[in-house]
Structures are given as structure tokens and as C-alpha cells.
Length: 187
Image 1 (spheres, helix red, strand yellow):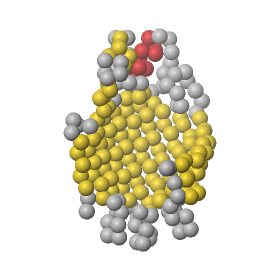
Image 2 (cartoon, rainbow, N blue to C red; image 1 turned 30 degrees about the vertical axis):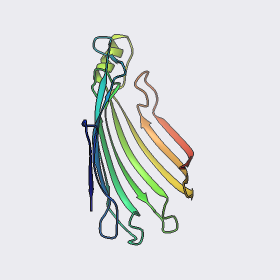
Image 3 (tube, rainbow, N blue to C red; image 1 turned 180 degrees about the vertical axis):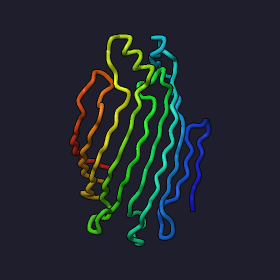
């Protein structure tokens, strides 16, 4: 049975069905953010008194190899965000991930993830940089892969390798490879 939650003011809506013996997990959420912090307007070189953004995200379980642990399996996750291009350096991004919870029978709470993300840099910001003699990229794209190893209840060791094309807006930088390792404690 799914649940629907709507937060007033247009901030967030969500629908979620948790995995069980009969159903695969699905989680749909979206919302908007309004921020009263001053933001630089790339068109008129003045500060605006606010900005806003909108997002939508969907996560769907696509396999369930073990009915006794219905959360295990492969999932697909997609997200999209938008913010005004006149006052936000990153105004559009989309990402798609494929991940497995419990990829091995001997490791039912580990997680393996593969992803792709695309960040669109604001054309207004790019034009602003060009007017000031700087070349700016149009986008950044990243392909990460990671593995989260459950050390103990609430303790995870995650290792990630990613490749990024156009890792900075300006100046122009070579493509980047990043290796990250971290330990997370959830209390």
C-alpha cells in the first residue's frame, strides 16, 4: 500500500511504496525551494533578493532476488533539477543511477552503484564570463561507480571512482578522475 504526503506551500510532494513480498519499492518526490539569500544576476550585474528551484526524483526497484529480504535487488533512480539561469551558475541538472542493494548473497546490506549525471551551466553566466574575458564551459558530465560496504550496523565504508568531463565552469580544466573513500557513521 502506498503513501502520499503533500507539504503545503508547494514545497514538497511525495509518494512511496516500500518493498514487501508482493510489491517492489517505488518512491516519487518533487518540490520547490524559495531562497531569500541575495543572488548575483549575470545579466544586469546586480543582486536579486531571492532565487528558486524545482526538482523531481523517481526511484524504482526493478528486481527482487530474495523474497525474505524484499529490499534487496536492482533499482533505477532518476532526478532532474531546474533553477533560473540569470542568477544560478548551475541551472539544470539530470542524473540517472542503477544500484543494487545486497548485490551478493553474502553481503545483503551492501550497495553497488553506477551513475551518469549532466549539469548544465547557465548560458547567462557563460555570457557574463565571456564579457569579462573568460572562457566558460557549457556543461559538466560525470560517470561514477561506487561500492558501500556495511562494516557494522550504522557504519559504512564507501569507495567511489568517478570520471568528470569539464570539471569546472571556468577556467577550462582537463577531465578529472577522482577516487574517494569514506567511512560513514549513522547514529
